[in-house]
Length: 314
Ligand code: RIB
Ligand code: CA
Image 1: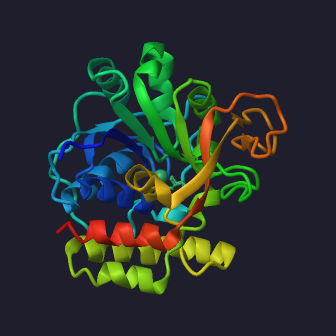
Image 2: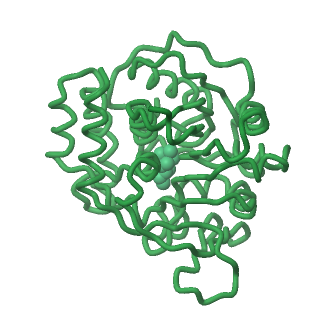
């Protein structure tokens, strides 16, 4: 089967990022051209390490992993160890990676790949702050029309913020980068908190991962047992939202999701609202739609897809 989607995952692992990478690696519909690490949940040295840890867990040490930007375009780095732990992958004790980092900077890999691959054949899947993607677009504007689509986790509207009252973490870390991405003209699918807060872990869902009886199942269950405590304490939820794998699930089964083509602008100046995704869900402005903004998820369908695919890994 020739892959339906040829993608680059731009990521700040993060337990939920790890599940997105695993889902992509377990799915024959997807050709993972490379992984670009960015500073976000934890600093860049750790996100670049963690991406390789996940590839080796999946038995895919051949996936090229690139280190990218170690800080936002204009702001100091904000990290999220309070959610992901000091390592970014707390909850499972996995060995340091043997596979090397690629010697090329992630931004150069993004530019080179989009220039060399057939126009419209590569989808970018950013699931952390958008610094790498925006830096590539700023340095090489010619790549924008060559990208097939951006499928990103980030933003919020009805759910409002998870790191400030107004902003979701990925956008909050680098609002200027998000502004560049949302004004790039590239087709964008946004998987915001409005959708991911419906994809919540439960005891039975985590137990199903553990019951796989594999190294992957054990690591995933351990990560989620750790990761979910933040949302349980903050929201009184039953579990933690699996934000990032929803992007890969949308590529695989778009029918599991629903949303609207709307205009989304990024607040970059607000004293209290910087990083807010100003989503014109009700069409009250004449601003042109620039994103498919998802709001609804079939959570059971999502978890059965995720569990079935992770069962294919060792
Ligand atoms: O707000 C959730 C997002 O921020 C997810 O991508 C999570 O991994 C963190 O990066
Ligand atoms: Ca992430």
